[in-house]
Image 1 (cartoon, one colour):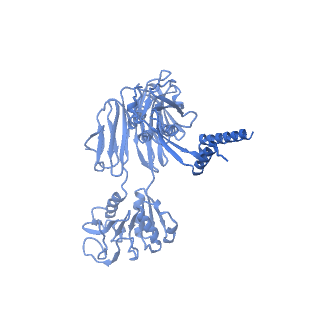
Image 2 (cartoon, helix red, strand yellow):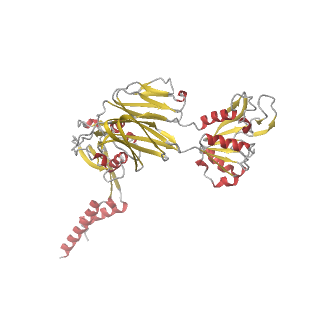
Image 3 (cartoon, rainbow, N blue to C red):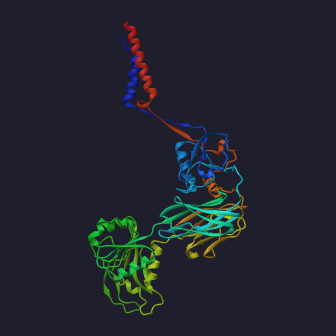
Length: 527
């Protein structure tokens, strides 16, 4: 029996289906952009415009019938929808009321974001607000935002926070405070100046609320050390908790910034060891068992010291490890600070710390315990320095940045790329010119970069957050859209194409076609 050509083809296709090879190749995509249109309530007075581009645009709308405006999410969702787009054109007033700061989103995007300032359909009364307040606080802190306003006549100042609105009537020019108790995490607070129910000016204030630090004291029986340590940390606004030794096995120790051991921790040494390995800090104020090999230093028996300090505990010979820093008071070593794994152990050799909290009948000029613990905490868990400044000012005003620590804590300050000296407990830029300015500041625990918009006149872009839009454009490599984009300005994307023959409809259709053709030829030959 002679085999037909169609049968050979069918056999070959079936073999391919059995092994289902996957073919992969990349295809260069013609550059195109995303037209990202804000349809939120704050854009009701903006004209409907047609954005023209030398490249194809895919429209993406956001904000309509939504509770709040999330520009950052809109940018990410549009890029996820059109993964090989080469750029974005954003038509929005920059009013972002929730989620992550869009400027941070744009900085990680990898494609330029251009923006178009909205055109208002009606004349908007002139007005201006400048907001001054902190960029971060600790949980439980109340926050005061100071608003400087300027308006021709009567207006309304409005603060929106978590679906709650507070309004205050204002006249002409002045200063007004808004107070609130923010929740933990990233918060966005919107402040509007309303004139005849139109938004004359707007500022979005980003506020980061940090959790309080937590201390766990492990003590079988509370003693004087326990009382003084607890009171000290509570005065520093830490959350202080205590458990008996047997309860530690059931606790998640990584929730705590520091553990304080006032007893022999033999029963839970594995838990403590794991806590150290993962970067925990342990304060040892006890003569710990020599079997605890995760503790780098072991305190020995009491020795008498005929000096300025009362009796002290000293270390065994060879007990001090490398990279050890002594904790010294008046020339006497009262403890040692040592790295252990990813964490740190502080072993006190003077075990009656509570006595250091007393002034020893005024023989010492200061509270030795306070000084010792203050130096120690600054090294282990340095407090974040909270900054206060205004993100938008009128031309002719000074930019002032204040921080809640001494100037020695601020390492460097750059304004528009220029390093400036720090001579006071605050930083002042005298009457910066109109436009967007950038600054960055290096602190012991953080590196902050932000922008300041200097508005040339009270009526400049009323109701539009030019700071937000300009920031999005600058960090992404875009800017204000002028329609002159060229192909060489863009990174041409490549689309990945995967073909699995077993799941490819063209391949299956081809197989069915040859099966039908072979059946047809067989039927024709049979007749």
